[in-house]
Image (cartoon, rainbow, N blue to C red; front, side, top):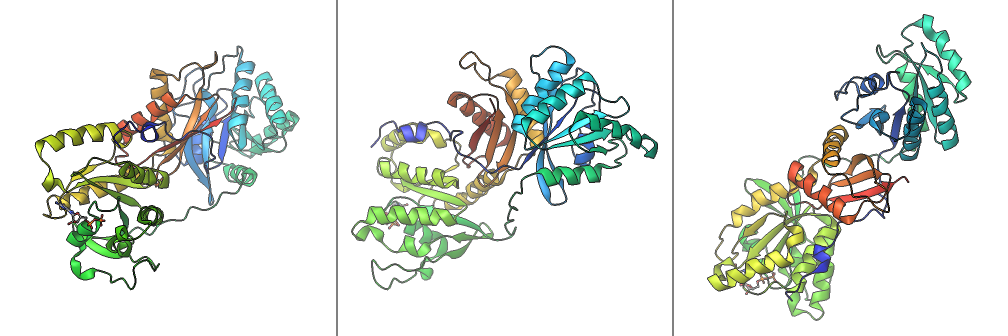
Amino acid sequence: MTEHNPALDGPPDGGDEETEVKPVVAVVGRPNVGKSSLVNRILGRREAVVEDVPGVTRDRVAYDASWQSQEFTLVDTGGWETGLSGLAGMVAGQAEFAARAADAILFVVDSTVGTTDADEAVARVLRRSGKPVVLAANKVDGELQEADALTLWNLGIGEPFPVSALHGRGTGDMLDAVAAALPQTPQREEEPEDAPRRIALVGRPNVGKSSLLNRIAGEDRVVVDAEAGTTRDAVDEIVELGGRPWTFIDTAGIRRRFRALQGADYYATVRTSQALDRAEVAVVLMDVSEPLAEQDIRVVEQVLEAGRALVLAFNKWDTLDEERRYYLEKEIDRQLSRVSWAPRVNISASTGRHVERLVPALETSLAGWDTRIPTGKLNGWLKELVAATPPPVRGGKQPKILFATQADARPPQFVLFTTGFLEDNYRRFIERRLREDFGFHGSPIKLTMRIRE
Ligand code: GDP
């Protein structure tokens, strides 16, 4: 089959499935109370934050933060425009957005000024929201000012935590309260750094998988099969390539000739998905001596579904003549356009041509798959992108992207917090620009939305 393949040209994953994200803490309060200084203090000044000047829109809105072992995304809402007029209305509007997007709110008040109309407007919004709120009475730089903080009980938010964003005084107790208000998140399990990376060598029957494996790993490692058709545990092999060890997944399955069996296609598909489950990167091998087949595309789809890094290897290059080459290019353009970001190598398992080029391709794909963009950097980038090309209006409304976070790597997963639905086209645009500016060569990317209408 050489038809246009909708499955491979389709939109990226939509926003309908929940991705595990770190809890979000939004910092709200009227201008000049010291929100940015407090954000700076919480981050330990790991990321520079613009000064809190009234009326100046901040470059960045969200950051990676942690307290004790609790990780969270810290959102500075200062730059959010709400379209409401008047300071109190504007700040209350920001608080309303914040309350929707966040799991907990850090409400900052200037205790040297006391409560103002704007503070009271924010307090009303937050009380209604039902979200946990921690009240920071800022600018309590010494013991003498502690009494000022007590007046903030009248906001009806609960205990004011006296803090000094400038000196750090009291921020520990305040952060204890923030952490206690957050839902517990499962700890990320860290992979051992130096383990050999795991490769699945996949492709439809007869494309040359076992030939390539023999070329790379040598014939002498052939795993002898007891009886055709019996299931045995998968056997992996550690193979040295380009001066470092790699784990090839289920080499026993590759070397056993499945095509000889009845129902071989079905078992090949199952084998492929089992190998992909355990792999980090997939080399999809294709046979250039024949037209690309539906089955080849299906294998690529399996890799994308499994969320693995991808290298496309075109085998039997020794058989290629000018005419076939011409058609091959067309087939690739037409059928593999969705994975145009994947590195390609043209090899011959028979002659050994360019087989060594698999190594840099694997390394590139894995580097893309591993990439993590810090939340502050991501949001600075996103803010510029959205300012230059805003999301299209939908149903008379302009959806806003409040902030974004990379919820996971391997593969990279991004979550956009928005006030409306973003069209597939616009999400594809963001994905394309992410790839242009941050790489992700060889890796699928997942973009999902959390809509707060
Ligand atoms: P597998 O089913 O994917 O493991 O495919 P095999 O490795 O068994 O190869 C299928 C057939 O293609 C065999 O006859 C191989 O000799 C042949 N073959 C594999 N690689 C190449 C290649 O690079 N060039 C040519 N001309 N033939 C190849």
